[in-house]
Length: 55
Image (cartoon, rainbow, N blue to C red; front, side):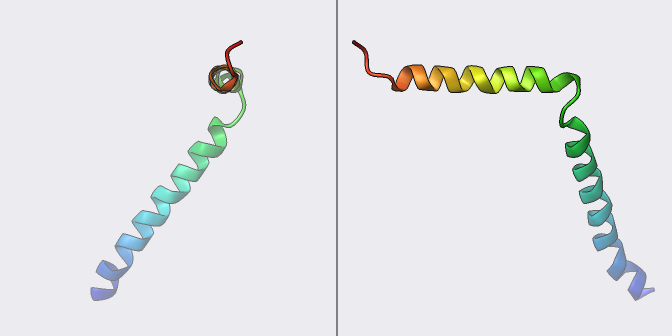
């Protein structure tokens, strides 16, 4: 039974890793993509505006 206790942690970690990757892949694009792109564009625009010298 030692082999079972030795194999369980890597198998559990592999399952969680696969679930994480699948979640990331599923969240790319779709309905949320426009909102995420808009949020990134807003942050970049505010950073660019702050970087511009005031005239």
